[in-house]
Image 1 (cartoon, rainbow, N blue to C red):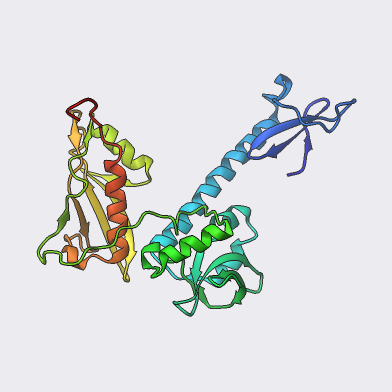
Image 2: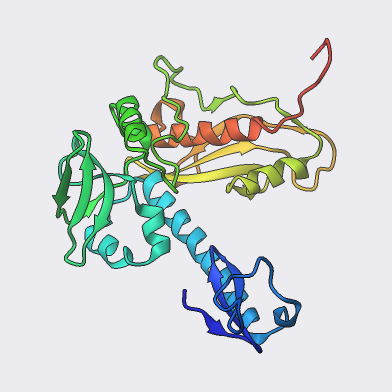
Length: 288
């Protein structure tokens, strides 16, 4: 970002997300200062840049959240849309190096560029950079990738780092032989928390919604909406509480039998339950 004049003898700019200053006069002209001078702390231009930095942070977080939604729901994303937002650094940071699938569901590549003409440049699993021009692409949830471990190994070779957790996202695959009438999983039930508030705070801190007595996450799986829910206790209950069962509900609000839960909804529900359970109180000592 360009440096702008602020006060007598100083210039300011956003550097790595914060307001930085440098001298504009004398022998130190052009040298960035380690801290913001007291004379500038209440300067209108400094305040303007701070507000801009806050907006940029919110924008970057919103881009990551939107791309995460596309990935979790395996929604088809118009290639033209990717090309339009790519010049924006926040969007590009959220999208770059994500695994994408175009017209051929068996051809997975890591997104490296999107041109104005709507063409995508991806690195395929053979290590070749190829150009794709599908009308839409999907950012597949990792549980849907048949050779996930191979994809992870190849990504490590390329040194790929993703802003949106995709290929290294923790996944759970639905086991075979589920009881036909079963509607809940208790693998992560019984995690003890000091209060219901602390458990709810953990849920919201992890990005999950708290509604009534449940922590929930919504997924669009196999073309339908599914809500995973973990019981966290009655609202306003101030005593010690424990995590409850994990269940899934369809768009009509009815509980789904486990056999009817899609692979992405299963994985994301288990991921939520495991993440909540991980924050439980751990007893110390010989009887722990």
